[in-house]
Length: 86
Image (cartoon, rainbow, N blue to C red):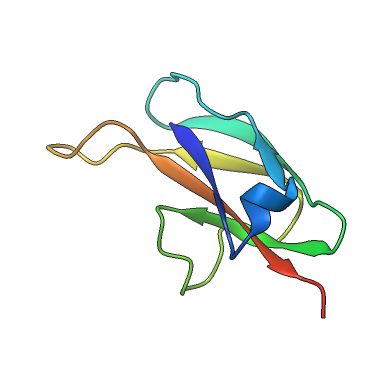
């Protein structure tokens, strides 16, 4: 899997998520942790790059199962979505 930062300006502001990438067996549970930069709030964890639906979790520390889709790239993307504090 690999982890990406979502949200306008979040990555350049210093928001980050761990682990950034790792190789695990299919169906492995991985603990992810999000760190919001000053002026940002964590919104949730999403499987894939589409953050328009319901997140897998809205907790900054979350356990997510990594499941590859047969016949598709084995690189599962986990997106940590951040939003500016208004």
